[in-house]
View 1 (cartoon, rainbow, N blue to C red):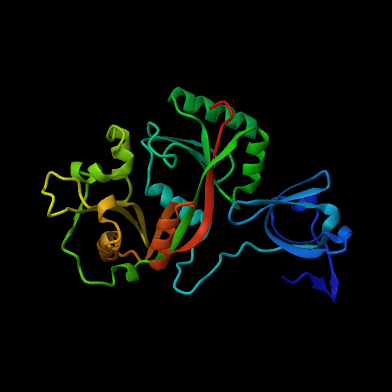
View 2: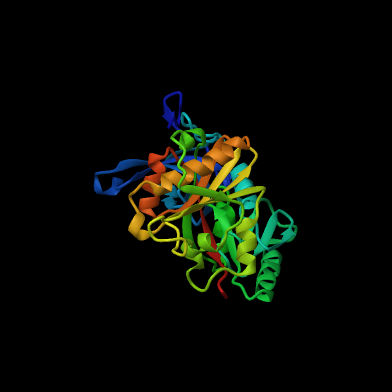
Amino acid sequence: MEFTTGGRLEVRITPSDVGKRVSVRSLTGASRGRGRFTDTLGILTSWTGGVLRITRRDGGQVEIEEASMVAGKTVPRTPARRRGIPAADVAELVTVAARGWPPAESRRLGGWTLRAAAGFTRRANSVLPLGEPDLPLDAALEQVGAWYRERGLPARMQVVAQEDALLDSRLRERGWRQERHAVMRVGALAPLADREADTRVLLHRVPDERWTALYNRAAAGGLGDEAREVLRGGPSVWFATVQDQDAGEAAPPAAIGRCVVDGRWAGFAAIEVAPERRRQGLARAVMAELARAALAEGASAAYLQVERDNAPARALYDRLGFADHHAYHYLRAPQD
């Protein structure tokens, strides 16, 4: 990171830059005679009482004493690019992902979309802030709370770590608490299908009873109408099932998956393999056949969402060429 002008370190940020992406160099431990420089890049969330709070790309927050800052500047929000990885800004990808997992009902509140689906997944039962509400923040939050209470649901907000850093900070100041951290990952679509066709994988347009038998979210009492509406929703949805030929047609499938095609994007979800059939390449086979169907519809890029701490899933997607695009998490209202 380059901070100097004419060879001198300079602090070129002020409290008026709150909300901007900044790079800050600070010196810690100098009073003990073993100081070291630390560079921090992220969104300047607040600057109060002589302390800067910066939200990094992964959602983590760093507090820096103003007195320890030796250099600082604003930096443009340019998307990271890697060879073979689809380029997309956060707004495009968040919007596409929301269309691919639509709620049973929704309401617009300015730039916010309130979503509900009888509690089936946080994605379909949270506020998506793609802009500013058309009311002052506290008034908007009152309406959010009332809307979700009418449906017997807790009020939640889905926030992208950096894009929504200011909103995240303001909600936490009001007692909202973080839960469920996840990562949006992207990759090229064609390499997923670059293998021989696997006739074990059956594609269909609706989540039938065999498919739902393995779906982990259906394990506790089946799927309600709202959940099925979410699963079937999206521009063009495909479901994949691998039936275990040795177990008979009445047995649950060996693997399942879901893919929604939306323009150039193919969104993967519900990639699940029966415990006794893991490490046999079935997840790859399911994704390959779904990718083949998406390519036939003109898609070229892939995305999926995975919980930050799901190491096995992340390792699989690493091997398939996916890379992190952005981190997001949910905030839950204090009264819920």
